[in-house]
Length: 76
Image (cartoon, rainbow, N blue to C red; front, side, top):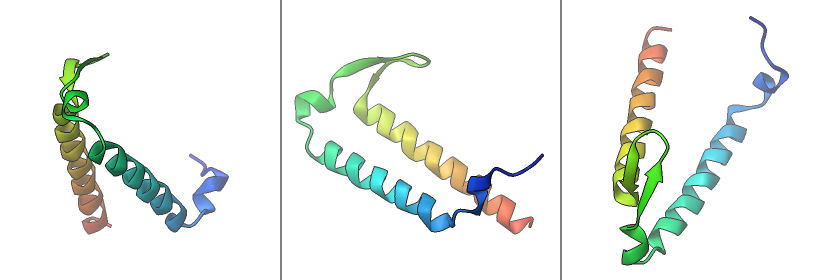
């Protein structure tokens, strides 16, 4: 399988994107009211969710991916 041309872009470009998303997400969460934070919404796969539940899943999901990256690097 061939590589896409964007595989030549330095990793730092992707890290900047992640850092920007993290900064915006953190700002948003810090500025939610208690009412907004506990509002229930419907997720298309998991059903009814709250923001704290979703944040917990996101944190687990990120750690899960990091574990896969660490394993891949160890087996390199």
